[in-house]
Image 1: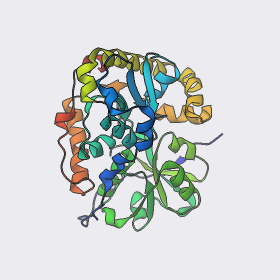
Image 2: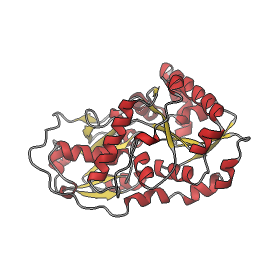
Image 3: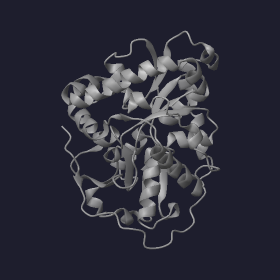
Image 4: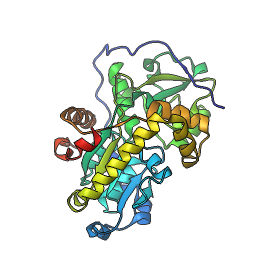
Length: 334
């Protein structure tokens, strides 16, 4: 059974010098165009006009919706599994799904990529659910020690924002580190084989990597909320408002049940996640949080992320988040 990693002591140090101008990362928004196969497998854009069929729900294996699916709590919906948030937002763009759940960065890149959607709900913060992992024998004691080193992470994901925040907190710029954009399986192999110096990753991959000799250099506490967001297509909002309301009621009730019954939740989700119960329990203990409504504070939080990405030229231009939030279901999620 994996053992929890040891957390290294020390707090993040504030910026001590003016960061150098970052490098321009070209083509980042193209990440939302990588889901062709997933979209082909779950429907076509012409289906969006059909408001008589089941609600089409996109989910990721470890997202909050996994428990709804695993418990068969919403038998009248059509489920589509996606490897990533960007793939899910591309399915929304294609009209292949009506609603789905992603992390905090994919909505920003989707908006920059001109995907049409609305944000109708979120979760409580999950800062402990993402972290920078390092090997203890490498001698790194602070994130600042990674200056000039190689860091693996997923492009356009929640961990991308965590990297941005960590760099700012330590007076560093993107040019001060080498970033390798790798999917979790590729990053795990690179990390295990010392091809990268650090890995910024989220649960359950975070929990799966925990073992003796691996340490948490930093997590998102005090830096990023790492919330999940519920996205819906504008067409579904117009044509299926009551179906969406009913589904959100089920989603919230199932989430609350899982938090109140962690052992049963673990037994149900471990087979769905295809990982052992001990790892599942550890990941869920820090990453499964209640749902929450969108509010002006959430608006400001997401806008700050979007503005941060725009300032670093990680997206081509500033995007307006305010126009994307819809609070009509606040009473269901609040």
